[in-house]
Image: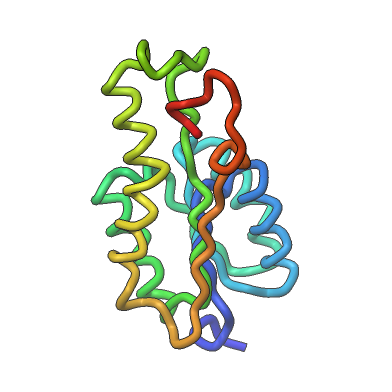
Length: 155
């Protein structure tokens, strides 16, 4: 099976946690993968774990950066398109989590950019590379549906 005929997924935030677990599962099923994360060292370790099982392209960077999103789209193009996009990357923001009245606005803007704007921007960037029937999964935290005291900026 050539890469152009395999199912292909792009997973953001794939160096640990749910993103890495999903990448492992898809690799076992022989999906080609494009993976990203902000931490280049952790992403390289994830790549090294996944590469024996499937074709994997690891691109370190920040989904909030337009140039990084363009690089992800280029990788999707080079693999012949995507069957799945998993928007999993996120940021918690200021820590310890301040109340909204004390939340630094630049930090709050960063949370919104990474967690809300960047996933939509990535979908827009990838639109030409989404194959017919492609699936988009937007991963979120339970803090988005259940209020936690003090988690206003993130939740």
